[in-house]
Length: 194
Image (cartoon, rainbow, N blue to C red; front, side, top):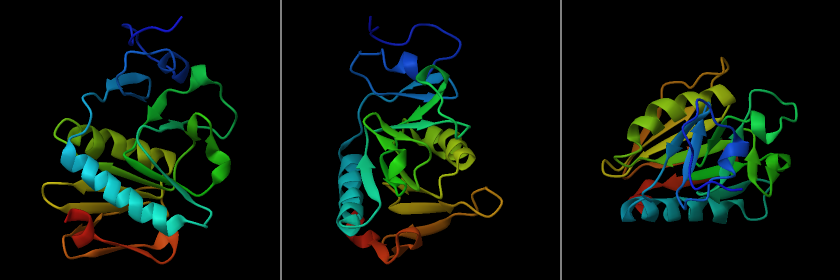
């Protein structure tokens, strides 16, 4: 029987997560539940639509696909087929790109996306800059973009040979971001932030 929201428990799994039907958006980070409600504001949504459209248009006819929240990303420490009750990290990035289509199923994606974009809001900034940064690095996300809406700034973290994110490249209005991971795609931030 579905429960309306997480009950007090030490650690949760994806199997628990699937039973919550309270209408709120939840994420699991190493078994701990985080409520993502209330929903994002207007500026956040505007940036999400703008960026996802640029990725979507570029990826037409190519082997990678773009998705937007809410879309479950189930992260596991092993390549083995782990059942839902053992998955303890489920996130919903604002935007993600997956190039290994075998990772996709009807529930979302199982494994690290190639590129993840989080758009900061006052309620999510700490989580996105510290907790999710560490999770995305640990699970091997190749590029992690952090969009600062009010500063009109994007930080691009790229996974290095040591499996750690390097010093981020910083881009502002007037700059273009080359997305080498996806070939010839460049993101014009003047267009994104206008």
